[in-house]
Length: 398
Picture 1 (cartoon, one colour):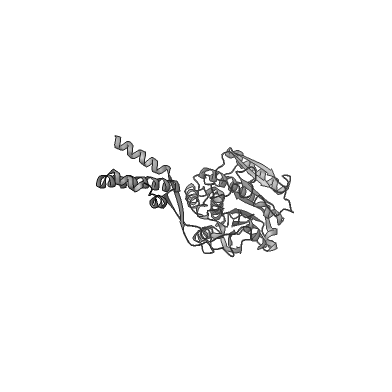
Picture 2: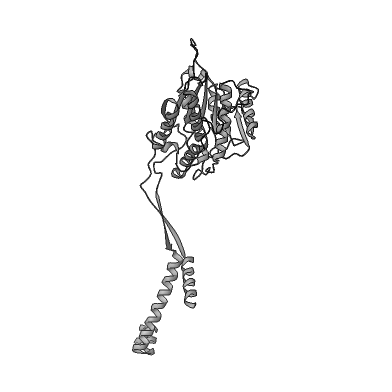
């Protein structure tokens, strides 16, 4: 027992005088000269009537897929905005089944867009819209942007730039409200004007509004986050995603779209009812949430041929047509360096105080040992003579 106490006391003594040395074994990071962003889009073309030469109206469903963090390899964030991405893919899957049959194909084009550069002022969305032909932009009746829809309980918010009295906005909100009442949830509306003189936007739909396209953002957040406040830090922390919340969002958006496209307003018809061939697939949603919750996706570090972008493109290709990836340069806002992973080694080392104390103890031990050896071999008188001051020269001359 005594030896155990002595060991613990000695270990505690050593630990008290120890410090840590951090060593990162990696090459010198190099500046990324021209970081790129990739937007992915796919179409579900509507059905034109015989002799109809006019372009069909379009409804766009959009979600940005990238995250932000000072440590890119840790920036996963399944709810920032992985939940919106998963909801978009499931909506595309559901409507692809409807549009695969000419009898149930609607007279609306559906445009699905997975945009990049979301944390960087939705830079990818702006470039994506600029790439559209003017006729395509003019054909968009409205766009629904999905942003963080994976952890809401009973309240969801519809953020708009146009006044709620706008006919399109009023119609969309009424469609959402009708479905939400049937689901037992609440959808509120938040109106925020765009400051044209300020290039910063708070929501993705504001980039659409700058191109005079009616748009809204559906989000669990009631107010826009401060710049990069809730979307990143050292690592993206928004990982808590509930599959049930994503399922509710998919049902809300899909049913409201279906009633609008097929003119079912006022009729209590569940197009995507459970146990039907058009039912929402929870396993599909959960599997994609699992993937996004462990996949870092900071835009400047996703190359054009990155497996994650390829996976999104392939999945969208399964459900839509004319899928293509638009690659563009990310406008300068930050400076990025290419080192995203490194091994951190932590060494426990003795402090300077410990070194001095150890030197003092060692010196005292050597002196005592020396004195002991002299006494035992030559006597006390010789030991005294060693430490006695020699007589001065003046005394010797006398």
